[in-house]
Amino acid sequence: MKAIMVMFDSLNRRMLEPYGCDWVKTPNFARLAERSVTFERSYVGSMPCMPARRELHTGRYNFLHRGWGPIEPYDDSMPEILKKHGVHTHLITDHYHYWEDGGATYHNRYSTFETVRGQEGDFWKADLRPREFPDFLTNRPDLTMMKQDWINRSRMQDEAAMPQAQSFALGEEFLRTNGGQDNWFLQLETFDPHEPFFASQRFKDLYPHAYDGPQFDWPNYSKVSETPEQVQHMRLTNAALHSMCDYYLGRVLDLMDELDLWKDTLLIVNTDHGFLLGEHDWWAKIAQPFYDEVAHTPLFIWDPRSAKQGERRNSLVQTMDLAPTLLDFFGAPIPADMQGQSLAATVASDTPVREAALFGVHGGHINVTDGRYVYMRAPVHPDNGPLYDYTLMPTHMRAPFDVAELQDIQLAEPFTFTKGCRTMKLPGRQWLNAHEFGTLLFDNDTDPKQEHPLDDPAIEAQMIAHMTRLMQAGDAPLEQYERMGLQH
Image 1 (spheres, rainbow, N blue to C red):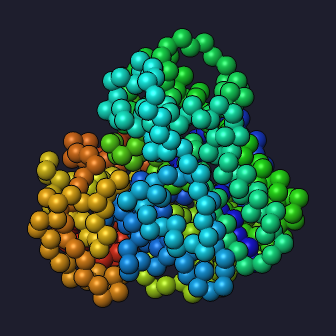
Image 2: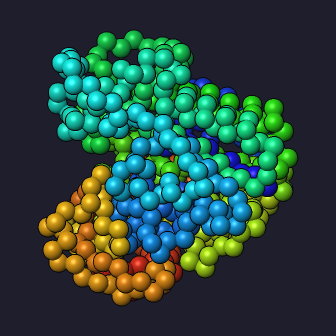
């Protein structure tokens, strides 16, 4: 048996033809939908990038116990389990967060791995020569990273030199070398279409428009303050990068045809989360509640065992279901600590795997959906407390916890999933002030753009019941109930 996961970062379902988009050119996603099962109710779990990847490995929620960080010593890792059971796991990625302090334990879980450098502000090429930077860089809060990105781009004048193109070329090399062999899993992962929306000119040419404003392809994580012309330009630039992703996805589909891989190869095409392009008057993610544009994700699966294609599935699924799905496909044991469920029966016949799903970011809203209603519960106090990180790997995104954070380490009692290990209990670092947004309830069936919050105590009570049940099942820290004003 063989498996391929093609994973994009910040892929937006509303920009794809199979999900009803009629203006972004994504013919290969449409082609994929004809050859696979398309999921209508796929949701994020833990946000953002590396917390989502921890769920991809461990098959369980991350965000109630810890923020961004590495795989923990007690974590079950799907690719490592496969490796121990005779499946060669190979990671190809240009997602540079894997090589920072907060992600540095993930790639070593695979049998082999290779990386492509240069995405976003990846501290890649050193160029100390005096240079002129564009005016748009002068007022950004992330100036150092923006300038590094500008240096990186100077080395990518041709499309073939861009990280996504290089990553898929490595994927082709792997498939041509190993397609005739058995027992392998390829995770082919690109940072695109994550910001900055840096696409080659041939994809920009698909979206001609008059724009004479400043260079603008990397929005701040903030409220929209730009002109309508700038907002439209950003959306079209993002569309160009989605079309570039579509082209390289097509290269994988071509290889599956050429190498006759459909007969015995599981194919998963997924993402970690979406992105706001001015909807709700916001850019990006994290700062605001996780509206549908961020939380509701595209997902496609071809399973050669059931051979279902061109069909839709309405069952509620999440990122954490992918680890047990892959383990089940290869006949490897699924650890008891995994909360996710294999989607084999869901792909075959839309068999449900859950009533409701949690999602969120550490220190933000705790959200729950039953597939129709989405309930976003805000912290009850402006200080967002109490909040703690539970970890044996005290690192943030790009640096270890600083000395001040480590001055008052407490040891927590083991959680059900830490295999008897006590963890550090450290003051939590929040991404935002979630309290100011308040608690929100939406009906996605009647209000798919989530523009009209409901005031319905009966439905809210149902969603609170789902939330507390799932928190208890995941052994959430007691202070999370206090932070949210919930009964344990």
